[in-house]
Figure 1: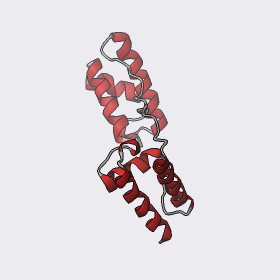
Figure 2 (figure 1 turned 45 degrees about the vertical axis):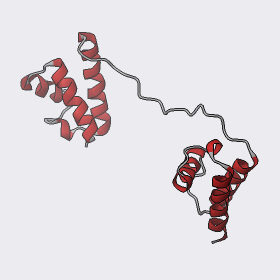
Figure 3 (figure 1 turned 180 degrees about the vertical axis):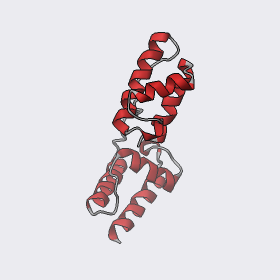
Amino acid sequence: MATPNQIKKIHALKGALKLDDELYRELLGGFKVKSSTKLSIPKAEELIKHLEEKAVAAGVWEKRKPARAAKTSRKLADDDQSKKIRSLWLQLHQAGKVQNSSEEALATYVKRMSKVAALQWLSVKEASTVIEALKKWLAR
């Protein structure tokens, strides 16, 4: 069965191409189904590709590239306290107490603990608080 997003895209393309029901049913007949909800996922992708090609050629559709994940260009904090925080975070991950060892997950934890969005912006006192919390978590 086609996914809800595939069905939405099929109907959006149908609308962009201004296909009437008769022509749309004829098109679906070529895929050996009577309704877009009866399409398998691969067949739905085929239909979407077919409709997109027609719509782009007709000038009523613009095919976009998928959005890329945002990259953080911020340099990692390299002071001693930040290194200690990062080290404790990785120890927690190795101990199975933290599922995601990424820098983003660490930043989220730090923000929750100190209300500061990045390690390099922590004051000495805030960094000490985070370190002590991580040590206590590791000891549990």
